[in-house]
Amino acid sequence: MRSIDTNVLVRLVVRDDAGQVAAAETFIGNGAWVSHLVLAETVWVLDSVYERSSRQIAAAVEMLLNHRQLSLQDAGVVTAALGRFRSRPTGGFSDCLMLEIAAKAGHLPLGTFDKGLAKQAGTERL
Image (cartoon, rainbow, N blue to C red; front, side, top):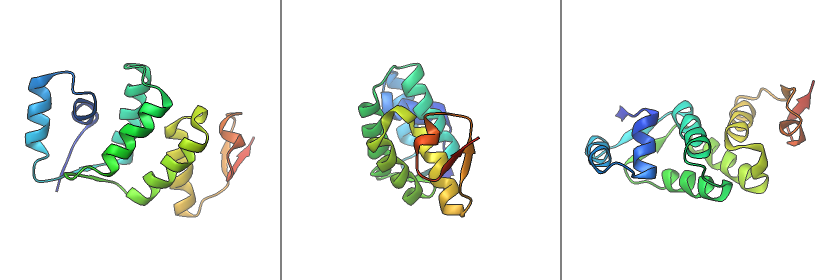
């Protein structure tokens, strides 16, 4: 299966350049894989560049999870991260994803200096 990078995924979500959207849709027509890193970078771009709200970011991640042509790396972890993010969106989706990846790998607690992240179950504030 093919994979895509952040700028392709951003085009598919934001749809702000018709030519690039068409090229991205053609490329993923037979399926494409999205890594955790690409997903995290995409969420960062949606937040920082496009100033999307937490609710809009959650909707975008959900849309990607349900996309017919996209396969997200370890979709169960992404789904758990999305649930965690929806319950506490101020922490940021990437923090939720990082914590769920660590949990699945059996490597908790997650040590952090981040006061907000440290409020999440499974973390330890250093």
